[in-house]
Image 1 (cartoon, rainbow, N blue to C red):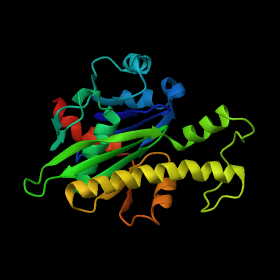
Image 2 (cartoon, rainbow, N blue to C red; image 1 turned 180 degrees about the horizontal axis):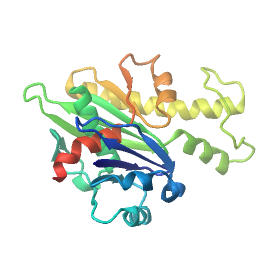
Image 3 (spheres, rainbow, N blue to C red; image 1 turned 90 degrees about the vertical axis):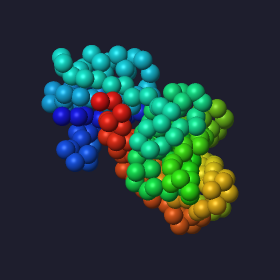
Image 4 (cartoon, one colour; image 1 turned 45 degrees about the vertical axis):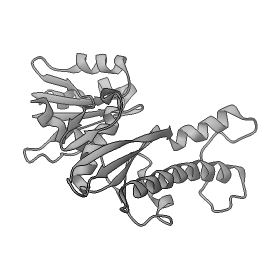
Length: 250
């Protein structure tokens, strides 16, 4: 059995890959509770595990120690090319594996120019290009900004007299402090996405799709919809990408 694991900055997600390549039910635990979570039981059924880890060496060591004897373990990294996608990030292997796996999944889901957003602790906004002549795909690069909660807490923690809890609402013209903070953070994300989208549209002379995954995907999609009509929410892009990448680690 193949198990794919996505270790983010805050949470760990995992799923079994079915015989047809699809994912089984996704499970999740905080990184702090990973060792005592249901992951340990799931790993007993595995003969191969592919991991996307962006949480550092200590987590990688902890995961390695959790593995049953004889299980093949692969800590995936970005490559120059995989699953039909060329990687222009330099050096290739310094691209976060979560971003690379998400791009791979988005390409196989969509097969056209796209902006891929991973909305977690950090928000990554990546550009995927499709050559109209060769039909090949290229990952062009992308940007990274703080996630919504990180932005809000940065404001609250580093300025005086601002509310510490993120209980405000999005508003076109905020008329209280919490709404002003929430709306400002969301507008920063929307602005970054729209700018990247316009740059990709100019580059490929095609209106790209916007594919969003991650914990804040729904919030960001709702904020984008008045601006863009081609927004798609895709669950577990990183896990899907790892499942596709399995053939690279035979």
